[in-house]
Image (tube, rainbow, N blue to C red; front, side):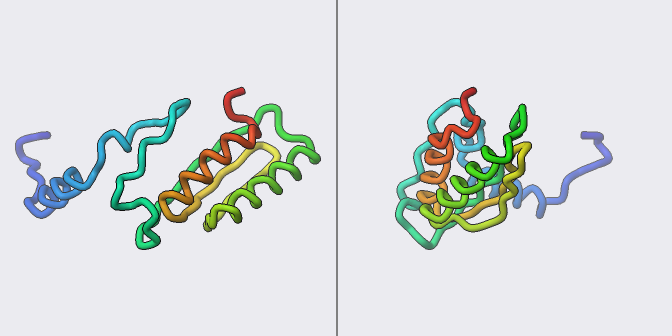
Length: 121
């Protein structure tokens, strides 16, 4: 950082507070790995929520029949796990911003992997 540019102490304090709240291990990619454990204080607690953002492209794109089946499976999985939010299930893949309790989102993620729509191809 150039010597003429100094961050304000208010920003420094906010950044320090964020660092103290962040769980570094949970900020790393979990691609092809099990998800990290949910901290004990957030388990089975409706007071807390979590946001899941993801996209996954499908090549070649789904046929009309495959697309219809994928849409049905994703909707059912979301309903089973009390997931809310927005998702686009298109012939070329998915783009979703979803939310729920930490455990419900975790259950959705594992259920989603098990749908075998295109993961681990």
